[in-house]
Length: 392
Image (cartoon, rainbow, N blue to C red; front, side, top):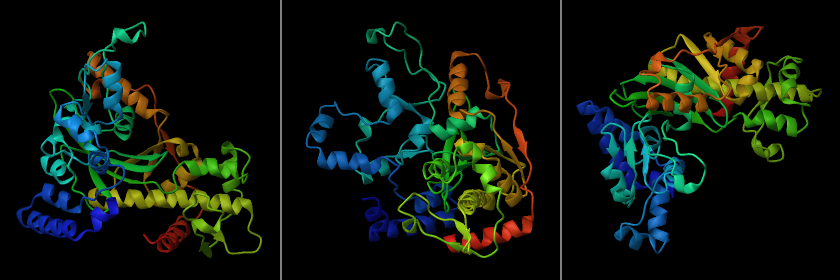
């Protein structure tokens, strides 16, 4: 459904008109709409499918008994015994039908995809009161509900990032976030605007985000399950036990038993070992991360530092490679569960423990990473070859 919509003549015509008019009048909003694409992660197509295929959906909506929302909306609804049907700005902003410029559900988008706007939840600030855990649930307590944020946004707050800072997450996805303050980044290439957080009585804070599902943290687990290394803790030692070769070749996913490896380089020699394979996968992880960072740097220039979190940030080899590739200071976050900490900080804001995010004093410090030892120019040259083979 997403591909059919994105590739249709009507969609392309509308996008070209919006882009042209937006450029003429200088409207970031219109240019953003022109570059926007429907993706499976957004919800509008799922809502459309429900309305078109579930026979009772339209009658329930007519009766005022149909509600749509995200996972946080459903959890709040259940915890408050149906008293609150709401979400926050960060989760709403990721649905694809919320206008982050006007701060409301987009009537154009909901009309285009036949999404009943009246069935959508109320949108509140991240630190707002979302009600109380109902005593009727017999949990033995009733506490206020605050601190609602989307995953990456919660991690941004948990790692204490502010305008101009860059965070790279090496987890279930590869994700780069740059805090842009009150400026909303236009959609361009693979960089999208998101709401990073909102606080009662303050202006929204935005960020530019670039994300990919390629070469994410699960590949470290895969190296272990494939028995190429004995344990995750040994991956770095195995990777640095061999040297890269200047004549790599490219191997596609379907050439290695359908395992989820998208691209990597190996030495083109007959004595290639498991260690060469491991190093190739780790280098590809660092290379793909650099492509992601470069997409954001092209718009905002180089930051003073890069803060890295996520499961794969446990690999010193990847972090040192990133430091060498970018020539920037790379810091490893010692806040292992940044998203949880972000939700905690936002809850504290809602309860009045802190008046501003800048009032929060972090006890955890960042660990500065040194560049990978060796010839940086050779590593950059290898990256260029990898980038060409990968089609970037």
